[in-house]
Amino acid sequence: FELAVQLAEKCNEIGDKGVVEIKRRAAFNLFCQRRFDEWLEIHAEIKTDVITVIAHFPRLLDSSYQESLKSLLDGQPPDFPENEFRNGLQSLAPYLASIRMEHAKAVIELKKLYQTHMRDADIIERLKSHENVLQVVDTTLLKCYLQSNESLVALLLRLPDNMCIVADSEKVLLEYEKYNELFILYERKGLHRKALTLLMEQAHIEGSPLRGYNMTVEYLQKLGNKHLHLIIEFAAWVLQENLNAGLSIFTCDSAEIRSLDRGQVLTFLTHECTAAVVPYLEHIIYNWNEDAPKFHEALGQHYISKVKQLQRDYISILGEDEHVAPAGEEEGELGEYRCKLQRFLQTSTAYSPEKLLVQLRH
Image (cartoon, rainbow, N blue to C red; front, side, top):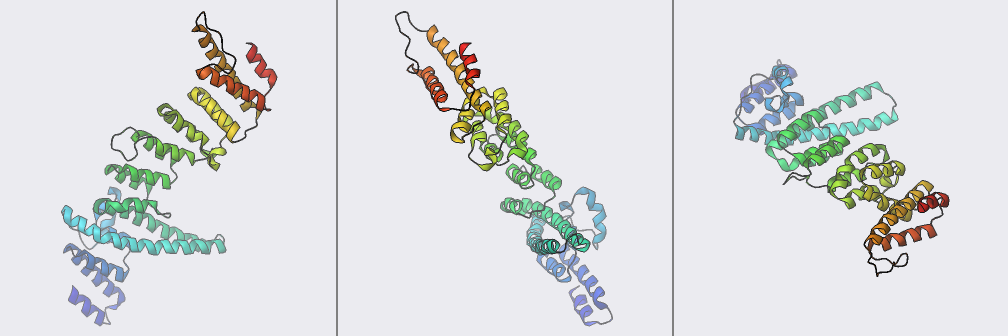
């Protein structure tokens, strides 16, 4: 084949297409000989469509595409043993990475053009074409890295312009049990429910890189009011595991958390974790200067209810010869909550005295 290529290049009658055809066949011969770098050099030279190059490794393709892409090749590619297959992938990966750079650069340039040429159909078509190639290349690169260089998987998925096809990537990452990388995929694609479900499922698995609740807390703190339904749904299990960690989801000092609908948060905590209600109300009132009467009245009512309960317990265990301590000077929680109530009544101007008096009398 090497001689045929040399002769073809010198023969004017064969023409450019004929030379390309001979080089393509020569490349396939090199591929069958496991000379992967030389095989790719020829395809880079004749600018073979990347799908055709990938088709040489049917195992990288979804089963639904394997048959249809056979026609792109000059013959049936060898079914390499595992070590030779891995060698092929190690050569293919840098080639795909270079192809990726070309198309990613083209996408950036076309997006700039699109901004200056509004709704240009040609630009949109070219942009889609490059993005389609990037989807195939990135997904194939992911499969290459999983089988030849696992350390690069997370780096690929973290690329800002990563175009991995979610369904295919999800399937192969689960197959290889790469849960941390699967989480990165979901996070980068904005698949919040899938990301949070994965974190919850992995939270109690020994040895999992996603073990525990910290990643869930951090994830929920970034979502904002648009995703309050998800925050509420997935905060529940964290609150059950650790009150302070769960509470921090709603008290983190960030723009996203400050923007949450506090009424909905309060309703959720009231039903899901009553122990978090008072700390939450104290935080939004004393730290964030919340001045809505409903929150001040809710805090006052909780203080009163708590003091009454603790006072009943205190009196029930008081000895016959013991005297009741002055208000606020009792030991333990009763003294603490009396002081909190007194401070609240003296400093807050946002509650209705009438509403709290009704509760005090009863």
